[in-house]
Image (tube, rainbow, N blue to C red; front, side, top):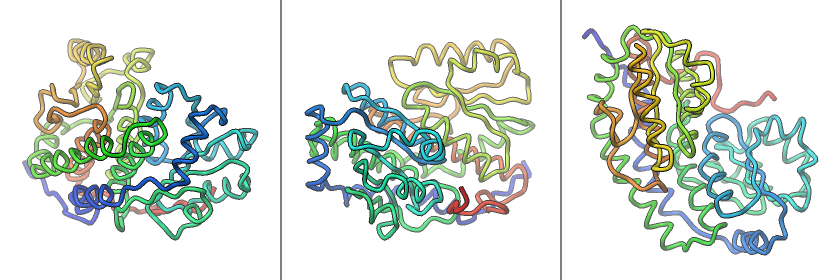
Amino acid sequence: MGLEIIEGRYLQDIRDQPSALRDTLGGLERPSRLMQLADTLSHGDMQRLVLTGMGSSFHALHPLYLQLISSGFGSMMVETSELVQYQTRLLDSKTLLVAVSQSGQSAEVLRLLELNRNASPVIAVTNTPDSTLAKRAQVSLVTRAGSEYSVSCKTYVTTLMMLKWLGDALCGTSAEQSRHELEGSVFLVSSYLSNWKSHVEELASRMRGISDLLVVGRGASLAAVGAGALITKESAHFHAEGMSSAAFRHGPFEMLSPKIFVAVFSGDDKTRALNQRLCRDIQESGGNAELIGEDSGLRSFRLEEYGSNIRPILEILPLQMVTIALAALAGREAGKFERATKVTTIE
């Protein structure tokens, strides 16, 4: 095949994800201040929840957003950059802020803390316990992903775990049930990654000659849709775009060609049939498309049977393999930054 997989630090971070998830799981707790805010929310004393972050931290909020909406809480997702420039009226005592930042020091989150000035109580989810975000938040939930070389992988999956833990606390799910459900993710992530090299080789063969990657899905899968497209651009320097499966039919379907690859998340039971039909329609129209899920035709895209509560953690794994495969095809080390930095310090 002539494929050389350069095993750099980004790949090692990917392979370390089971350990990071295990460490995060072991540190899960429900501080008294968190439960006080949950009581305030359940009694209707808060008008809204604003969920905010940038990059993969923002995309990771999709499952929490849907969980809160399903539980009857008025919620919105807003990129921190937009919140601090155009939506500052949301910062008041009737808003509960959930701010996600792996570093807790990005330019946008620092600006948010400056503007908020404790007007809205803040629940922080971060990987950096001594960061400005962690210190200024009313509740600080710290993931234990450890240090990370470049592209978000360990910090992304542990953030998803922590946000599920947070959502369960806010929505009244017992800590025992929540922890039990999350425990399963460690084994499943480890099982999938044990075959990482064969996954990469299969995907490299499947995607040879492809010039563009489109990633589509619905519901909670939009977390992996957004994060997957982002990390592909970051780590492989390869053009990728993420959108909802429905949005793909509203125009982008016209772009189909042999050089465009469409990764379609099967998703949960509610819209799985719709996603499967989209994949078939793409294939029947002469396009390249494969499902990501338990019914995938590719082993590298096939995930074991799993519950919807940990689905977002597992869904990002095949796209991580895609980034390694595309980098290998281009003869480059995946995840090695040339222009970007780990922490964005300019707004």
